[in-house]
Image 1: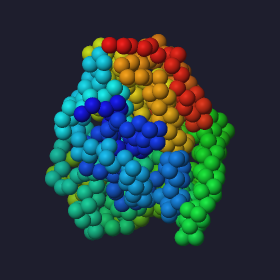
Image 2: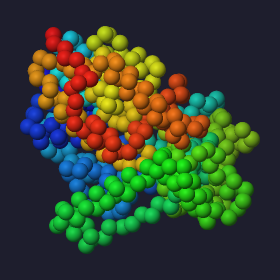
Image 3: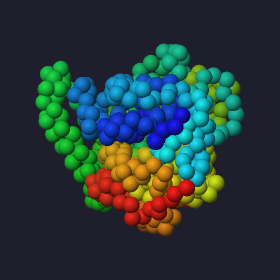
Length: 474
């Protein structure tokens, strides 16, 4: 198969790129997806209580609003259904159940080997995301019961009356714990570090309101604009302003105090790091679930034996272990499969940590663009804002890339951008010393988050500038 553009991944980034290419009149593209359905994170994560923690009307494509979300923070199934509908116009371009086994720059185009045959493409767009490789705890011992990661929930396992361990206290754990506690005979919650949790302040969109959104697109557009402005204001509370961070921290601790009366349990659930160093979470019932008499909050997992989990000081007999332990975010699983102009893989290029100019283009990898990758995430606003800006950037690059021409960002531009990201992260809470998924443990570099507001990224990079690129011809 020969195409102009090969897109790897059929989540928000991959589908968004495909839809925008089609809207611009480009028909020579393919979307390669290893799973049997679209949806990415929202296809994979089906754990009880899964939901968006960004307002749903800000967590969909701006060019394809969804008036039918039932809640401010939509359940995961609604987002998955939205992506299934969004994919309909580009179904003929989807190659589901297709593993990309390798991709190499030939000197004139990208040569991909896949589980369904070879693909040649002038341009390669990596849209595989950063929440695809579960991080599993490396501890001694083996457990004889059932163990699964939250992103691969085993719905055949009966939780009613079971003794369950939940390992981790991140975003997934905060959502699933109340659901597990409601069913299990006993629950052990194992945490390395307690998170900051703010009230969720969810709301329902009733039938009449959803009908109004459908009938009046301007109302939905106005809601999205107000949600975006509200999220941008959160930058100070998460990142930019010490006084605003302290005020938000006080609200989180007040929420904890209001829901957890027991002083010892409250101490265990009190974060020991700076507000904003880790992802700030939202829940109205996580703390309440932790106070239930059949719930034990203990320290981090240190090992297994046949019928129990171990922490530093305790042994707990359990039947089921749920690993809500996150993902390998600073080392992308596809990086070892992609080989650039010099013959090095992307993984080898990223030995000192992930980096890309404009969070999108990598030196030595002509006509290749990475979406939702290095320094392209946000701690205060919707990932879709960044993804759409990157898609605009890629479309602009394509307009500068006639057949037979390759654009490659210079090493100097990539390095300069990486230095900027590092310098702008020095005084941010993410680098204040706590363990988080933004900082590469190998190098200490903050390689996941964009260190500014979403508005700044959109203003700088939604329009393609060819100046930092060199043109290469066969």
